[in-house]
Amino acid sequence: MTSVPRVASLLVGCAAGFSGDRTDAARPVVDTLIRLGGPAVLIFETLAERTLALAQLARQRDPESGYEPLLDEMLRPVLADCLAHRIPIVGNFGAANPPAAARRVRALAAELGLRMPVVAVVGGDALTSPEQRGLLARTLAEEGQAIEDGTIACANVYLGAEGIADALRQGADVVVTGRVADPSLTVGPALAHFGWALDDWDRLAGATMAGHLLECGAQVCGGYYADPGFKDVPDLATVGFPIARIEADGSCTVFKADRTGGCVDEHTVKEQLLYELHDPSAYLTPDVVADIGEATVLQVGPDEVRLSGVRGHARPEALKANVFFANGWLAEGEISYAGPGAEARARLAADVLRARLADRRDRQGPLRVDLIGVTSVLGDDAGDALAVQPVGDARDVRLRVAANHAERAGAERLTREVTALYTCGPAGGGGVRVNVRPRLGLRSCLFPRALATATVTLS
Image (tube, rainbow, N blue to C red; front, side, top):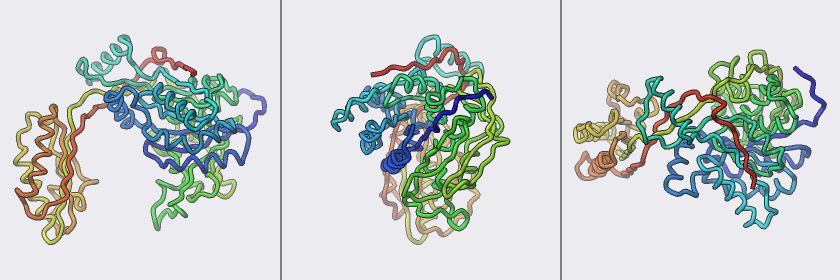
């Protein structure tokens, strides 16, 4: 590892772990960053694969939409203090439309009477050129996953930290990204702050795992960890969101915001470290291949855990790309049955729907049937789990049926049949809810790094 001049540690606080996360999370995090003083950054991680698909559908309906719908609620409580205390905000809340998100941030600042922030848009993740689309089509076809011409809704690669770091070096107050790797939201600020080389693998790997601890928000503070009687977590209703103090050598200490519930201990940290890691010795990201095989997790104080000893290896030559394509219409219908014989009546209703919807010409795949309260989470599309489940005496059952259709008309037929159960039987059904929506399919592949370069635009 090359030597680096001593630089003050960097505080990175996380105020969201997914789209739809709590919008009051940022306030305690920012208050804590202000109290601690020194260089600090606030990150929002709001983008998953499914989220990006939904955002793309929203942008198709409205060209000024397609970014995080809770953007205002997330930023409004803290934007003034972040600008006043020089705490940059970095978020992938741009989703399918980062330029529109940037415009909304500036409009929000104007509405609040604040100085106009410098907002940077990190682009390059969207693969839109004929050359890029052609290469994607050939790659997917070679892998046996060919997609018909004209059906691709969007295609995005997972960019790394370089664009974020460049934006911060240019003085951005807010950095808006689309699809970047989740840990890169933390690695970018660390790169800009410490001045690490892009091949300083151990330090990059340390910052990557710090970002991995932060990226799911309250999860590392006991949120998703909580399991009563087995893994008890105090005051879960006010669970805190995490902050990492990153050092120049890439090590970090993770703790939670002041005056919040939850806990940060070796168990919560280890559980989050292993979350979504296929191979702990080779965690692939656009910035580095991280290795936690010899890492040390140590409790250093109340709700403070230090992570050190992470090793890094050269980053992959290719980037992961997600390709979303038009995939018909999803139809869902639900109806409830209660009281004596509820389960038997729900099963009879399911049999009626199977018979009425036996024509499969427009259906893509099986008719999914779930009995919520009997078997649903552990069910399967083919219905095998429900078929072998003996008829019980459940007295509070909700029947759900769903299917994907190539055409909207077929999807609407399913919803009409569910609604008809009101009077066509069996007895006692109520609370019908139906929904039809367009569906995007997803294919993933590798894409050459050289053909997907990050861009930075400041406004």
